[in-house]
Image (cartoon, helix red, strand yellow):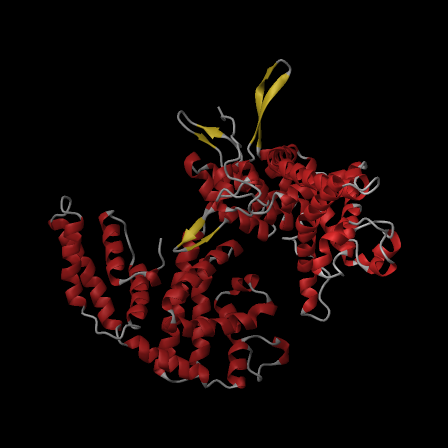
Amino acid sequence: MRPLGSLGPFELCQKRFLRSRKRRRYTDQSAQEECDVLVLVLSKNTEPIALSDFRAVMLATLRSLAPKDWDTEHEVAWNWLWENVERILKGQLGKPKSLERALTHFIASWSEEQAMFFRKACGKLPMARGVVRELYKRFFALAPSGQDFFKQSSTYFLADRVVEMTVEMFREPRKMVQEISGLGLRHVGWGIPPELFGPYTSGAVESVRSMTTDDNTQSAFRFSLSLIAKILVRAVSEGSTLVMRAINTNQESAMKKAIAIAPRGKRAMELLNISVGTQSISPLFWSIESGSLNSARAMIVDLLTIRADRDVYYYGCDAMFTRHPDLILRLCNDASTLLWTLFDGLVWRSRLVQDGQRRVNYYIKHLVQDLEGNFSPALKWLAHHKDPRLVSHGVVMTFADLLWNRVASYQFLLGRGYFLFTLLVFITSQSFLVPGEERLWRNILTFVCRCFLYLVWLYTTVFLGKSFCHPFSFRCTPPPWLPHRWMHSFHEEFGQLVCLDGPEMSSKHFEAQQDPFAWSSVPPCDQFVSQLLEVESPSPEWRRFPRPLGQDHWPQEFPHTLTSSPVANRRGGRQVDEAANPGGYQSAMPCSHRSRR
């Protein structure tokens, strides 16, 4: 359903015509509300509006849209409908502009004393009555039960917001209708009865009447605030379902009774979506935000209960994660106790036992991939939640093992294999080829190995080190953090820290390391080959140069020596986190579910 403020003349008339065909009853109040919004929208047009011409054009359009079903009864119904709408519009066209000017000038001319008068009580009131706001003093006199729904700390803000909304209703009617519809849905969650909007409007209008004698100003404020109240009443009436009323009680039994009358096919949407116009609210999320966890638990259990009729099985898992893709994150932040209820509902166990075993289905599709087929961040959210008992749940272990076996393990083995290969090349060039009699093949092989190390491995290391030092080049005291897009594993992070301390490390720990490639960087280029093929001890001044290869390989051997189970688990968790990048998971990964039958 679209909001009234977004409807044009054609859409409004078509909407009301379709309603009349379905023989629905409409009160004069609803027709007046729609026409009032339409008048505000039409008042923004600078061109003249011919309402009489619209009747003929719309009639011809309706005939062409339904040539087989159209008859004289439809034509009479349309003429009657448009006569009523045209009568209301003609009586109000041209007035919104003058009313807007009068109300804007009145509010802009308010002094601080007048603003405080509207919000506070008069200074002449006796102290025994306390500081009572003028607006709320009149409202509470008309509706004493309204005192139970207001907080004293927010009454000033609400009074100021009422004045702002009356002006904004004239300026941006389409936007305000959407905002007011959303506000009405929030009033449903707060349990505000619609009977209080009338006294509140009367109290505000009486307060303004006591501040000015201008009829246009009073009419403008009354027209705008009355229209706001009508939209709020409609939104509250349409959104006040049995489910929303049960949330206010925070009782599982009340929630079960409220949802019991809903049919199986519409049961999930009753718990996940209530819409008024273009605005919608989720009863499930509202119960979590308001702290009604008992109601939220009953809703999750009902959604994850498998039901069936003769043809179809009903299971609310897909609807729940489609409506709320960030459900895991919301539960981790606001209602962690409901995570157990959620994960228990994602498991189906057969009541039949075969050979001492029962069939079990895990519905983990939405925990592995999102709606677009990309990797779901559910595992990352659970890791940040830091609950060791929760990650031991069967559902979490199942989809975590699935990610490791199908995605992360290949990336882990590929990265470790490449590292071990470069380490073997380094050991070969530094230990196996250097000692012994000097031969041409040994020098050529050493040259090839070191070219690979310096042009491939060292280039990658220097590039990563540059990305690490980049934030420090433009700020005086930047935070000591490493960009996550560059640091994909522990050995790279450790390697960058070691490479930054290269000169000092080389002079203390790697003096015995021979690296002719580094020595040859000092002489001219024409002596490159002769210097490279000579295997001699480095001079003392060359020892001041860093030895990046040895410093980048030997510390990185640490991850391969892990024997402690907690540390190894930490490494495995980081490898799963590596798969969380956009390219780490493909939507074609098999994750089929077994039939619910």
